[in-house]
Length: 613
Image 1 (cartoon, rainbow, N blue to C red):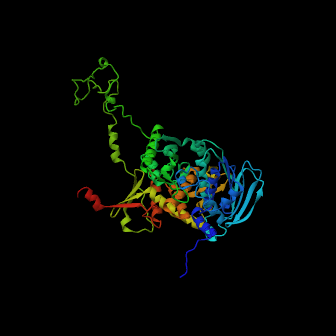
Image 2 (cartoon, rainbow, N blue to C red):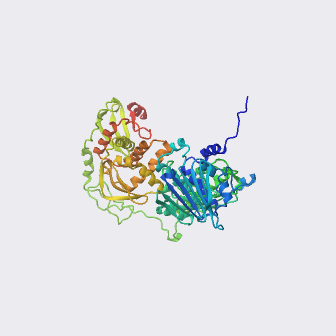
Image 3 (cartoon, rainbow, N blue to C red):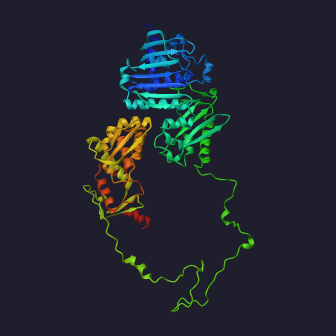
């Protein structure tokens, strides 16, 4: 039998490695930006077309490369950051594996221009599918410019798996934000299809956060700083009132490298435990500086996972530092254990000789059964207070017993004829402005008004998405809403479906939309169009991330949750009647869009047991 094991050609090996390193255009963006940082650049430009499918170009003013280095950087396992095995435990650079450029060159058409500051001419290299096409001297600026064209052109199956342009652009923006946050002293810019998305000057960390996410973040940030023998921690956390339903704005950096770590994330969330509900997530941008010998970054090709030598201590330090910052800035309540306050209300500030015991005055001749009062009894509180004689209008106290309560509006259950839910006297009432109660043959029916309205709107919005006939009510004063670049790309991809609900929305400048009309269903409510639209986008992201729903279902769910009446809203009899009629006209009236019950019944036998009958 002949030998069957053989070495793979470099071109095939590089394409296999590319499957791990370059999963989408955003992966190539991350690798090129990190290489530009390692080159010592203080100004980096990112240019993309068609969300990176047609072009990804990174231009930096770093150290540049010699002719030999320019050629060698496309070889597999060729790197300038690691010389020996011990160097893996002292890594301070962003890259070190030496696989990125070889992997990218295997699945794209690459053109690189590079020049060192001390050289007169630079080098031009063109590669297609791991094959060198051209290498020649060229006049170019100091630094390096790398262009990646037609990503996955020779692997069409991978290219077909790419998402839409807005979806891929959101991933690129995510990677850009992570790199820009890690290096605030470097100036960055991002252009997409000829339009400027970001222009970030070199600045302090707080200004970088504000430039990336918006001016309104300036008042949301709380500084965190802690120095220990294990780690040095610094950064910013968000105030609890600005927490969101998604985890999008949570960043951990270890030695300026973005990481994903659920264990450390839990340490931050636990510090907010008494300030936020379980479905809200705070903003944080935290930097951990640690000895490279105590961590291992060579865990995953994307370098977003790290192993720590003393993980529990790092958890405790992060938790206590965040908790202390929340208390220091009066976000969470603090206790002064040095002061005993148990008897503070019993201590008088008067001198003992100034304290006079209270006196009580009374009339010994007072006869309550006498025909007339000879003298009015003094009040126990103060003689200057009004007389405690009975009121002449005491008879009006009994008028309430003769007051007739108006008959309540009855429930019309429509086509729903289940005897279990059919009211006996067709009367209902609202309790605590949260629940609607009605008497039925078997006992009592209780309806959660918010869950019921969410179910009604959810099915209605799904219908609008199918027939594209959502009615719109024009706004008297159109409202503008400015989103983050990431949310703006998401909103653009959803505009057609959002208009199906009845919104009239159009693009208006950089990252800005104009809302000219809202759905008729919401016209009678006191609604802030801008907040509603922002919450709609936020809820959509949450539904897709947590519940893995398809786009249309996630959008209808988000719209219903943000448009429904909330618990604590008082309803008139007619409003309750309409709500119940529409609920029982739904396909699944018994369950909310979260899968929880909308209707609960209490049987007469269960009520009797409460009274031991």
